[in-house]
Length: 261
Image 1: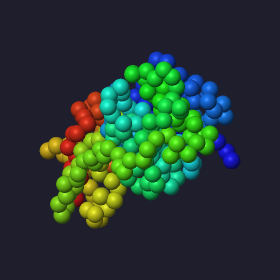
Image 2: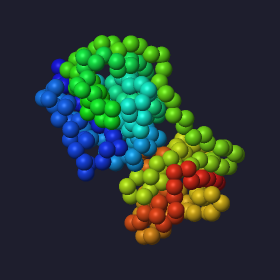
Image 3: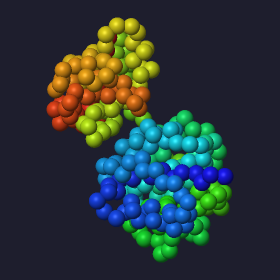
Image 4: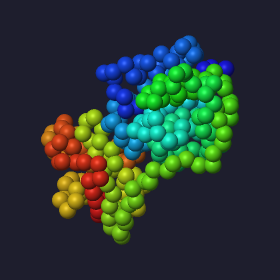
């Protein structure tokens, strides 16, 4: 059987030794491991950004993939560490909500707490569970270790609430939930939410300021002008053609966005 890939999603960045050390631990235990970097650019401690990035990417991995997500501001505290086995994947992470949005469309088979220290690296640091706990667990899973050997079952995991939309007959109000490196503000308004508004041109406002229409690609407007498109994540995003919407428009996480007919 082929070795299942291990994906990494962290807020560690790439300027320090943290990510490289995690990979070294995995490869020491399983030299044949295939490691995929989803992202290490999550803002420090931003569980919600980590949850969105993982949800946007995890389903494109081959079946059997082990998704390792470490955005862990509570490292060393009483927060739990878990592995979630679904019909298609394993998810390994602190139980702090970072898996919430990725698991929405997954068929969960079992959840186990990571308590069997046989599969940890020793000594276990109080500040680097990515190296000492999560990486070795992911490596052992890639070698075929059954999840139930890692610790006792638990019935649920910490849920991170998804921001609710406000709807009317001709509008949908949401908010910016993620800012990518291009400065695009990705909202919680899905393509399917736009379809409920019916046919015709749509206008997007930030707060009370009417901003732009909805187009099918970024260069549908002149350079430097704002535009709204349904991005690759399936959600409406606010962009500036050849510019940075976060900087130019003052977009922030939580900025209100209204789309209306």
